[in-house]
Image 1 (tube, rainbow, N blue to C red):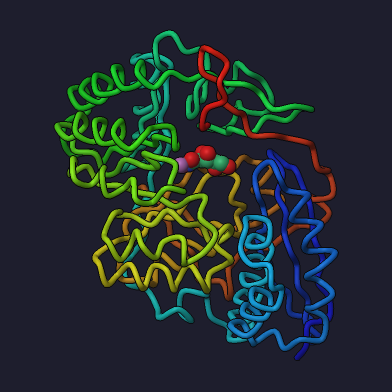
Image 2: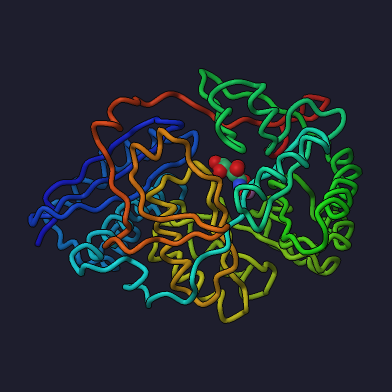
Length: 412
Ligand code: EZ4
Ligand code: CO
């Protein structure tokens, strides 16, 4: 069996997705997710111009060898564009292997370690009543763990607030929070760290008072704090027993986490923008985080994400794989299979795709009683309806960016 064809499919049902479809000489097809939010066409070019020609004629069973060849063979390593492209190949080859074996991917990864994956959704609101409604909606939908993002008085639009995103226009209506907006240029949001630090602990106090002590609550700081600010926030949130505080600092400076750790027992989750195992190496070895936020789509596929999480297991660090709407159903399926198989599963983010996306990508993973299960179809269990995909051509979309009141660009 050889790889006969590799096609890059771009579709924009509710948002842009990039999918690699590999076909073997035996007619088996495999899918991989290569979606890089706001930079989709860069990955399309990398795949089409540089990767696809290398795949034709290769043995699709050689997953590890193909990964090493694409990673080391390019000489210029890492980076989000390259790693999203390699991820798509890796996923597609695992998909093919599962289909040839007649087994769902989780069986190839060691079999199920649990019945299903606890998944969390995104509740948000400009003010408390809207936030409480959003939490109740999530509870009604069956969520048993919820991320809390709140507006901040004096700030017009900030990351994570669905209604503010909807006000800014551009396809945000369906989503709990879809940060990328279709349009010619990125939307500007605003930020004031001191206002945020003053406001947020009161929000968590109110949520705990309303919904009780048991519900696992999460929060995303989205890279906007300095180390000492992050330490203060972690400390201030301790009474509200967070499941995790995510991306409390921009993690390029990994030493910063040592300082945060010295001051707070609030669990930390990091890594949604990391590309490789090596980005996690120090954070895991020094036990500076509690949850690995990597995504199969952005870490170079199932193969390296599995290596990362196996390494993390030695330190009792668990998975909390990134699962926003910009991970396609193919990428989500990959993570749900991996999450079912590993011992050190923590939680899975699950925002849910829109109806059009579910038509384009027919999924066999299911969501029941707040848990995800990958289903038992061979491989990843996702099929791409290319006719349906063709109805939704690419639409330019950017992630927003941040400015402070004085006009300085800030981390978004
Ligand atoms: O901003 O997926 O935890 N989730 C997140 C996401 C990211 C987007 C970027 O593409 O931080 O909302
Ligand atoms: Co995040």
